[in-house]
Structures are given as C-alpha cells and as structure tokens.
Image 1 (tube, rainbow, N blue to C red):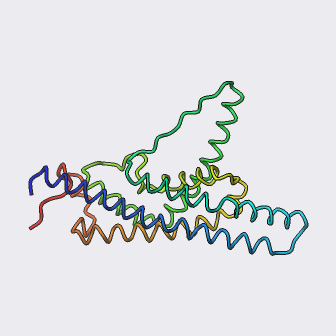
Image 2 (image 1 turned 135 degrees about the horizontal axis):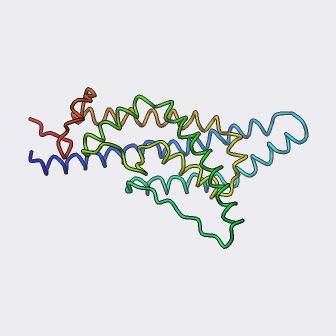
Image 3 (image 1 turned 180 degrees about the horizontal axis):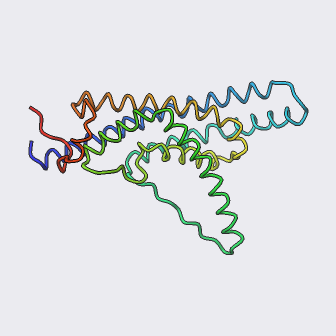
Amino acid sequence: MSTASASEFGQQLARETRERFVQATDAAIGSAAQAVRERLVVLANETGTARVMQENRDNLVAYRGAESGWVSLSRAQWRKAAGSVAVTEGAAVGGNSMRLELVGDEVVENNILSSRLALAIQDKANFELNDLRLRIQYLEGVEELRSGDVLKPDVLAKLLVDQWLASGMSRQLWGQVQGLLHAQLGEAALKAYKEANAFLIGKGVMPEIDLKRLVRKPAGGVASSG
C-alpha cells in the first residue's frame, strides 16, 4: 500500500470509528432521559415538607414537558457533530455591558455543568479513552485530537447541557439529577470507547499500545499489511 493510500485508509477508518462511537452513545441519550424521568417520579412521590414536595412535583412536570425536546435536539446535534471535527463557539453580541455580563455569567455556569459531566465521563472511561485517542492519533498522523472532536468527553457534555437549556429546562433541575446523568453517561461512554477500541484492534490497528511507534509514525498513520 502506498503512503497516500495508507493515509486515506487511516482517515477513513478514523471517520468510521467516530461514526460508530456516535451511534453507540446516541442510544444512551434516550436511556439516560428515561432514567431521569423515573428518578423524578420517585422524588415526586416521596413525602417531605410542603415546599420540597411541591418543588419535586414542579420538577417532574417541567421535565415531562421538555424531555422529548431535549432528547430529539441532543440526538440531532450529536449525529450532526459526527460529520464535523470542530465545534463552533458562538460569540456573544449584546447591546450593553450589563447584558454582556449576564450572558457571561450564564456561560460560566453552563460551562461548570458541562465540565463536571465531562470529568465524570473521563474518570469512568479514562483508560479506554486514552487508548482510543492514541489509536486515532496514529491513524491520522496527528499529535492531538482536534478541538471539537466527538471522541472528547467535553464535546458530548457541552452538547447535552446546551440542549437541556435550549429545551427550556433549568440548571437547578439539571443539578437535581446530575449524579444520575453522570453515572448513566459515564457507563455508556465507557462501553462505547471499549467497542471503538475493539473495532480498531479487529482492523489490526495497534493491538498493543506502542508509544515508541507513535513517536515516529508514518504520515498516514497506517502501514500496509501483508
């Protein structure tokens, strides 16, 4: 296989891996949404102070009204992200400094939520994620995954938080079920990373992680076989 052919093959295999990863985690969004609904139902049926009971009922009503929107928006944006290597960051444009400050505070709070989710995913899937990252870098002949790569935990995390808010739900409600979302999505990501690594190993891509080989990898990342 020529160097050019090896490069093209490596790029194609990396793209297929990302598509498979997105497909695997796409299904997990619906499962996580169902788990959240079930948790909120339990909370709404628990006895407590009048204030807490009312808050729990309000949370359930709010979630039921927005759940399908959150799931559909998240899945649509996630599938769209599979065909892109970068996430475009929207710049805030405002009419006055007070509005800009408000937007800034909201962005910071949103980023805190998404960062916590990304960290939970990374903590759960750290070893599989690192192995997959090295295999993709080898395939593509790069030193780091690019910003916005769907294989990075922060990309899925930010997307889910953004679509949660876009669906009309609050940060307070997210906080109510944050631990559950971390556990659900962490497990799903771990499984998806494992499957992606198994797929590449099955294709003969670095059955054993060899860091020395990565240092002097060919331009296309994939050597000819046979």
